[in-house]
Amino acid sequence: MTVGAPGPSPAELAGYVQVARDHREHERYHSVLKIEEAAAWRRDSNALKLLAARWSDSPAPDRLDPAHGAVGCVDLNDPAVVATTGILFMEGESEPAELIALRARFEQAAARYQRLSGWLGEHMAAEWPRLRTLLTPALAEAARPRFRALTRTTEAANAYSLVARLLDSAVYTLNAQDLTPEGVRRAPAAAASMVLTASWFLDSAASSLAEAGAHLGLSDPDWTSFIALAETSGSLET
Image (tube, rainbow, N blue to C red; front, side, top):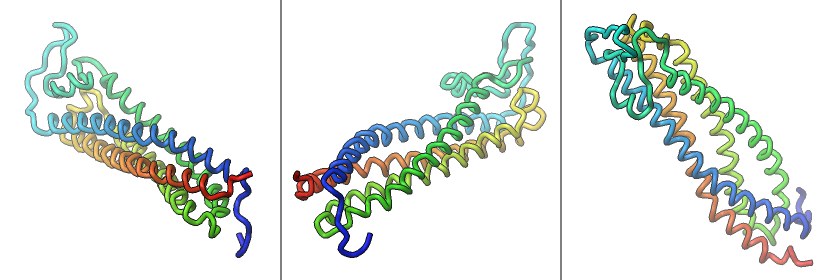
């Protein structure tokens, strides 16, 4: 935009206001969703920490005979983890189905957030030059909150890419460890170290996501301020 260039037409400004209304409501939902999802990831991460502690600290007791029924691996299971996540190592069985499902959830989440980062980043890249039409004396006051909201949404797009990388690293770490009962028993301290490392990746992903969600929530008054200022600027008059 050059010096003295006109601002948006009334129709364009009306469109900006409608976009702001829609995205304010959308971000109200997603700011909460991201925090809730981050909390769920931390619960899964805490379960991995408990397993790591169990494998690191507990001497291996006598194993129960699978001939007696579907018996658990008393040296590998943590009662709190079993009760809260269902992760149960069983004699004569393979990796617990709940661990397989946990890993799959994070693999899917990593792909989802990488896609979201790319999609949102493309849209934000287009918004920065588009919204320069607001940078006129008549609309400068309205432009400030609108660009604050744009900044936070752009930051969210960048954060989602980091979240995807952290989740992918957690999945890679879990895949690199044999999590069958026999695999853990071959080197329990090594298995504990790998699972603990995966949990730290999950903690970082959860923290980044929660922070992004919290920052999105801060845009609510900016969206509202922009709508009010834009509507009262006089540029919407026909």
